Length: 110
Image (spheres, rainbow, N blue to C red):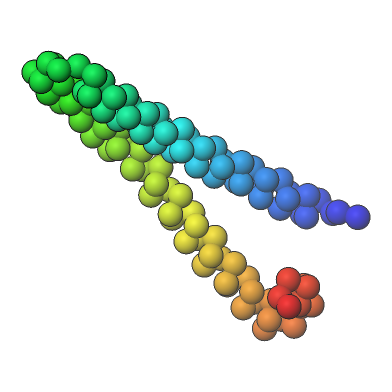
């Protein structure tokens, strides 16, 4: 049976995991959209023969790419910091469990 503290830990883990996954899906969605925009530009540049229009479209696309990248770079930083903090806290918990002689560690480590 789960006590109140264990239930809170499971809830906190579920919420934090859902938040990390949402940020990850957001980044993937934005990057996929940018990739499609670049593919569409290349396709249009090959079909149209007006070079001045292609240069203008490239400048617009480059500005969109630059702006998008500066916007989502914070999300990358959050994901990397979260992964590092998770690893660090996991190692600290593992060390504390080993020093306390807890048998929970042996169930996860072969």
